[in-house]
Image (cartoon, rainbow, N blue to C red; front, side, top):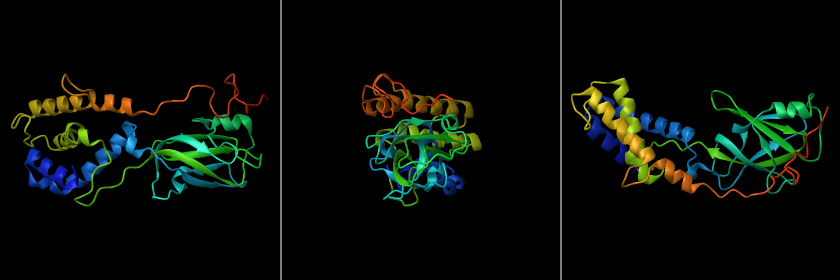
Length: 245
């Protein structure tokens, strides 16, 4: 369904013209929340963003990475390459790792050999590098979904789950704000209506006897992971760049 279809169906469900001006915002906000909660295949970068690093700093905000299509970082940096690690280097999710390697953060080199990143409560990501170097890193991550504001735009969310996951999320949001809204799940009975839409969302996520849920579909869509030592590690799995001090 496109944005116009989603809004029209929501109006049929909620039956209250006072919510119409809120629907676009609610749909986009729930899409953003779903992108936080689940690794949606359509938001996984297929071509990398670029981040220019220099010997002047060891930390960078990932939102400054540039992508040919204008995509911006949303979550989960999963691959980083450069001239030295063409297939990808090891990625840590704790900047303290780099503090242990270079406490003063003053070491420089020809290429970056190790990266780490952390997210704050607002999902802003900071990337740390070691050693500092003048080069461009290629980054793969999950990007933010595009904001829908035209009637013909389609959510970047699996089509099969627009009705069973996205719509119930918006309906439940509206129902929490205005419990008196009549819904097709139980008009005039707030408790029944809320329970009915919760059950519909549960089936959309986990499936039922006749159809698989979103979680099962996402598990099947995950890329096959290569076995063996990770890039940036020795054959025995030991970190090549760790230092004992």
